[in-house]
Amino acid sequence: MYKIAIIAGDGTGPEVIREAVKVLKAVETSDLKFNLTELDYNGTRYLKTGVTLTDEELEGLKSFDAILLGAIGHVDVTPGILERDILLKTRFGLDQYINLRPVKLYPNVYTPIKNKTDADIDYVVVRENTGGLYTGSGRFENKGTKDETATQEMIYTRKQVERCLRYAFQTVMKRHQQVPWKGFSDDEKNKGFIGKLTLCGKTNVLTYVFDLWQRVFDELSHEFPQVMLDYVHVDAACIYMVESPEQFDVIVTNNMFGDIITDLAAVTQGGMGVASGGNINPEGVSMFEPIGGTAPSFTGLNQINPMAAIGAVHMMLDHLGHTDVASKVEAAKKEVIQRMRSMQAGKMGFSTSELGDHVVHSLKRGINV
Ligand code: IPM
Ligand code: MN
Image (cartoon, rainbow, N blue to C red; front, side):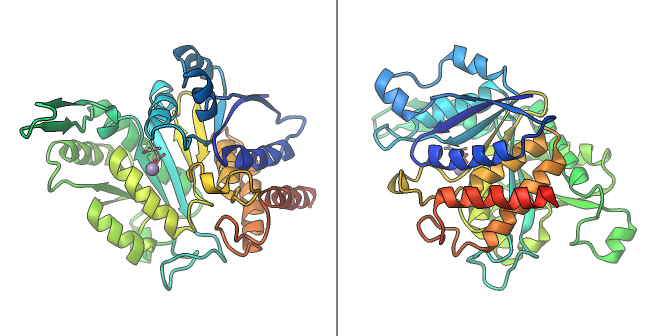
């Protein structure tokens, strides 16, 4: 029995979470059960009570096995408040130091990248999730004067860098337990490589922070001789993600770069409707979410794409160790995606709730075979 916290959130969050929960319920068996607790940590509650997420509530989240999050953000709340006091507070408070973002284009899904198909876009971004510019460290000097200075510090400890890089190396190993990465030549396979890890940084300008990342990367690599090492500057990474995404297997990067490149990655895999992410604490409580946001203009219309939220469910199942069930959910999602007209809200050819039903249906058919 798993204890799952459901934070549906604001906007279209509750609509996509409803479908995700349908799917979660559908995979329950006598051996696999979920005890769901709905929590109203969202903008609506904040507007009513002034409370975002209290320290006690954050503490309470530690008693769950995982958290499923819809979307946080409210049109009537100044941008930044809910993000900082609910989303980032949870990521930091639960020490979810990895933001895991699979980037996978499914067959039949539109990508704005010409001549690239599902065979080309299939990689994972491991984004550091609790450090760097997100630490919030900084200051104003001479505020309001013409001599003003604003400082925002990119802070990384070796421990933070090392645990993130280690997770990334392990991700490569896990991904290719059975079959080596398809991007390798025979020669590379003969050398014993099974996967590739690309460090994405900016060593030419961020000469302190990425010097540390690069050194720890090189040090750790000795523990993972089957992982081929690669490095790209973040600006170049943006070019390659569009021009030759097939060159990527696993990318690891810092918090800020990861935030930016994963949105670029999302659009190449079909957009916000299908991109899911995990905020992972490998030793603690992790939180899974569709990365698309609250989509205020679609709220309540039953037109938003629930596939990213369903993707969050299979990532969660995988994380909890139920890889087989996770694969089944992913397969069902993939099957339904092929029948959709578009991944965009309002143009899908189905309503939000119909898509959830179809995934459940597809799953039941698969399970019964
Ligand atoms: C994300 C989001 C958040 C981030 C915002 C909402 C604070 O963009 O999950 O990528 O910057 O991490
Ligand atoms: Mn982002």
